[in-house]
Length: 443
Image 1 (cartoon, rainbow, N blue to C red):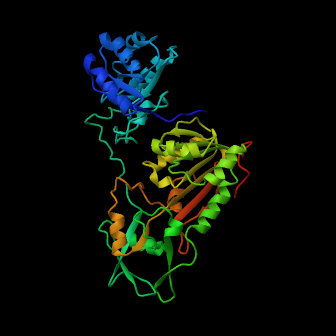
Image 2: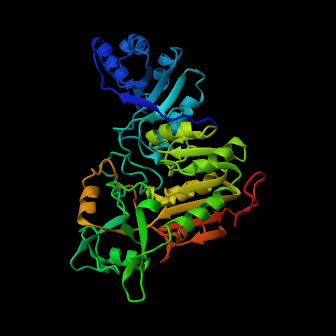
Image 3: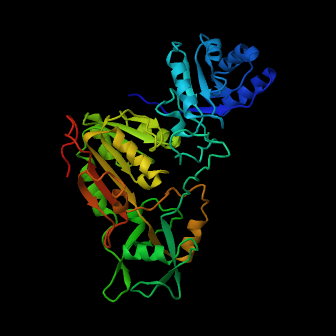
C-alpha cells in the first residue's frame, strides 16, 4: 500500500493554441505538476506536445457526457496523461456507474483517471487513480447527501442542498474586569466578553471545570501544558490556579495506549503530528506499519521527513482511500470534532478496522481562557486565516459514544471532569477475534 500525496493541479479555461506556451510557463513557475483543460480534438496532439515540453503532465478535462468510448480511444496510445472528470449538474449515480464500466475494459497503461471534487455519493465505490490538489476548488455542500437512491445532480435546482457545518471555536475568553462571573483568590475578576458565547456555554465549561489562566506572553498559544494553568474552585467558591500541570494525566494515559499498538495503524487527521518520539522507533522495529491520512497536503509534506518508514495519503475521514478490514488499529487523535460528518467518519473507521481491532478516539471540548485585556487584544489581532476555527462540534466522550455501535466493547473511557483537562478519550474494540499480529490487548 504505497499511497502518494496528491499532485498539484491547475484547471485552465480553454485557450487558443498560440496562448498556451505563455500559460504553461507561468504554471511551471507556480510549481504546478498537472494542467487540465478542455482542448479541441484538432488541437489535442499539438497541445500534448506543448505541455510535455514544459515539463508538465497533461490532464484531458472532460465530463461524463463527453467521455465516451470514441473520446477515450482517440486519446489512447499517446503517452502518459490523466483523464480528469469534471462534475456536471446532470450527473447521476447511473452515469458514474456507466463510466466505471467503460474504463474497466481499458488497457492503456499510460492513461490514469482523476476527478474534480464533487459529491462522493455519486461516485459510489469508484476511487480515482490519481488524487489532485486543487486548493481553489471546494467540495460540494451536498456532501453528505440528504437523499437516498437516485440523485438529480449536485447543481440541480431541485436538489435542496444541505449546508455543510460551519467551523466553530472551542475556546472563549474571560477578560479581567472590575466585576465578573469568575473571581480568583487574589481578587482578580473575569467576565465573558464574547457575543458568540452565551451563558449556557459558559456554565457548561464552568460545570466541567474547564477554565484556564493564560500565563504566557504569546499572541498564539502553541504549548497548552506550558502556557496554561487549570483553574480550580476553592471551598469558599473562588477560583485559584492548580499546581498540577494540565493534560499530564490525560497524555500519560494516551501514551500508554499508543505504546501497546501492533500491526497496521491508520491515523485519521494527522495534522501537525505529535508523539514522533514514540511512533518512530515502533515503525523502525516493525512493531507497527503506520499510515497517516490528512486532507491538508501541507501537513503531510511537513511531517513526512520526520517519520521515516511511514506511508502517507491525502484524504478525508469521511471517505478513506482504504480497503475494508485492513487495519489493526484506527486512531483519531484530536480529529473527531474536525470531521464534517461525524457519523460518516465513524462508519469509515469501522469499515477499515478488522474484527478485534481497536478504535482510539481523542478530542477536546469547550473551555474558557482567563486573560487580561492586553492578552486578549494580542490574540484577537491574529487573522482568522492564520488560526482558523477547525472544530465543527465540541462533543464530549459520552456524546460520541452514543453514535458508535452499542455492541462494541468499551475498553477505556475518560470523560472531561473537574480537576482534569478538557481532553477526553475513548478506546473501543470492534467485535470479533483479535487479529494475528494485532494489538496486545490494551485495556
